[in-house]
Image (tube, rainbow, N blue to C red; front, side, top):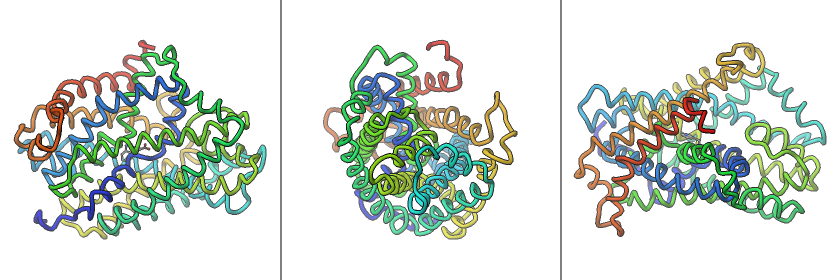
Length: 450
Ligand code: TRP
C-alpha cells in the first residue's frame, strides 16, 4: 500500500488517549496498587516513577520513532528501516507476543463482562463470592462464551480503523473511565478505612523497597506502558509528522501513573474498611471486591460501575493488541482491514480457547510445576518475550538507527534541556542494561538477589 494512503490519527489528543488506553489496563488496576502496598507504598511509587524515566519513556519514544519513520506495523517497520534478515525477527516476535497476550487477556476480559452482567442481575451476596467465581471458572461453556463476547467487542472497534474506530472509541471510553474512577475513588475515600488505605498505598517505607521491589518496579514500568511488542510502535506508525513525540510520550506516562494511583485510592480504602485481604490479581477483582460490594451500602451500583470501568480499561488495551496483528495482515499481505479484522479476531478467539479451558476441562494440562495453559502463556509473554522484544527495540533505536533518522522524528529544536541527548544516552546504554537485569530477574536467573 502506498504510504500516502496509510490511515492516521485525526488529532494528537485522540492519539494520546488511544496510547494511554493501551497502557492503562488490568496492570494499573490489579497489579500496581498491590505491588505498591507490598514493596513500601510511596517508596515503590518513587521507584516506579524513576523506572518509568529510565526505561519506560525511552522505549516508548523509541517505538514511536520506529513506527512513525517506517509507517509500518512491526515486521514491516524493521524491514523498511534496515535491509537485514535479522531485524524483522523482532517484529515477528512482537506479532507473536501480541497474539498470545490477546488470546488470554480476552479470557479475563470476558470475566469482567460477565461480572457487569452479574452486578445488574442477581448482584453480589455476602459470603458467596468465592463459590460464585469458582463455579463460573468451572463452566467451559461460560468461559468460552464470554471470551468470545469480549473478542467480538474488540473486532467491532478495530473494524472501524484508526480514526473512526480506535481513536473514536478511546475518546469515549477513556474520559468515561476517568469519571467513574474519580467518583468511585471519592466514594472509597469517604469510608472509614480511607486513612489506612492511603497509608498502605502511599506512605513511603524504604525498608520494604528491597532489591526485588526495585526490579518489580522496573518490570512493571515496562509492562504497564505496553512496551516490548510493537503495540506502541504500531500506534506510532499512524502518527502525523507534525506531532511532538516526546511531549506526547510524557503525557501518556503521566496519565498512566495518575490512573494507577487513583485505582489504588479507589481499592484500598474499601478493602481496609471491610477488613478483607488486599491481594492482587483475579482474586482481588472477582472474590475480594464482590464481597465488599455485597456488604457495602449501594454496593450493587458501585460494583456495576467498577466492572464497567475495568471493562473500559481492558478493552482499550485489547484493541491495541488486536491492531498489531490486524495491521500486519493489512501491511504485509494487502488484506482489507475488515477481512484482516474478522479473520484474525476469529483465529485469536480460537487460540484463546485452551486458556478458557485451563480452569475446567483442561485444568490437568500443566507444565513447570503445576501451571496451566493460561498461566504459561502469561508467564512466557510478560516475563520473557516482552523484555526480550524491548531489549532489541532499545538496541535498534540506540545503536542501529542514525542520529539523522532519529532527529527527523524527535527534533532537537522542539525540546529544551538537551532532551534528545539525554534520551539517547538512556536508550543506548541504560535501558538495554536495565532490561537485561529485568529479564534475568523475571526468568528466575537472579532470584537469589531477594
Ligand atoms: N499495559 C497493559 C496493562 O497495564 C498490559 C499490557 C502489556 C499490554 N503489554 C501490552 C496491553 C501490550 C496492550 C499491548 O494492563
